[in-house]
Image 1 (tube, rainbow, N blue to C red):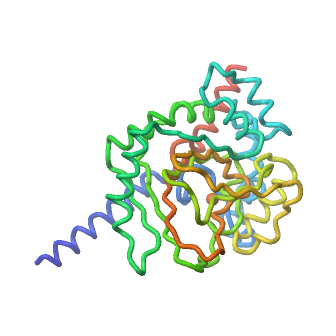
Image 2 (image 1 turned 180 degrees about the horizontal axis):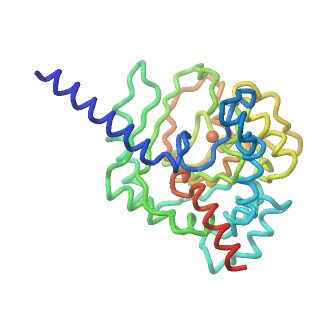
Length: 318
Ligand SMILES: [Fe+2]
């Protein structure tokens, strides 16, 4: 009886999931989220790609990039010096994080120290201890929890909303934030997969925030400074990305980029342009430890429709 109830419940939840996906198809178009993805397998010619040339990968890239260039803040990344474009639009009175944001636009990644106040910081640590760490076992080295706590989601949103507003020129709503942990045993190296190899998330301006409640001592975030600037070298790499990240890590053009590892202090927030080359690097010293982090992504909150609407507005009101 109990088994039947579980089967019916699983069936209903899967049906609900697929119906929702189908209903929301115009938002994601088969992607994992609502922001135009890098499409892999350029060689794979589907019926649509064979018959509608505007759907091929290079044309898609041109189309969405054209729209992104019209956006008031995303356009910064298409200039030689994004930080100068940032300074033309924003001043110190607009944001308490002016210096950090300037650094972000200059290099592609920046850190904000002591991000939450002491009380908030302690609360976040407790959420990790209660909901994430108990999931670890000998077999399970990674754990995560999608927060359904109103208190925690409000706390995070309250603190990041001014950054969201500057970066996207839009009030991004509250999300269910995901707390994740990575446990590293001595001498362990992950299998070769996207997150541990240098990669670009998108061919369009993409930004993530990553919060680290504790000092990072293993597997730090690594970024190629300068790779956030969208120029011919960027597109050269994007075309390689379309072939699939696993094949191109060594093949990217890294010239003029400077690799930097972020062994950040406790309670640090990283702002990073994930269209630039980045990865979770792997420490090879004989060290074990835990890396707690909250990744805040916007691919369902700043979408292809924001790019289209923004273009229509700029076209109508020019
Ligand atoms: Fe990534």
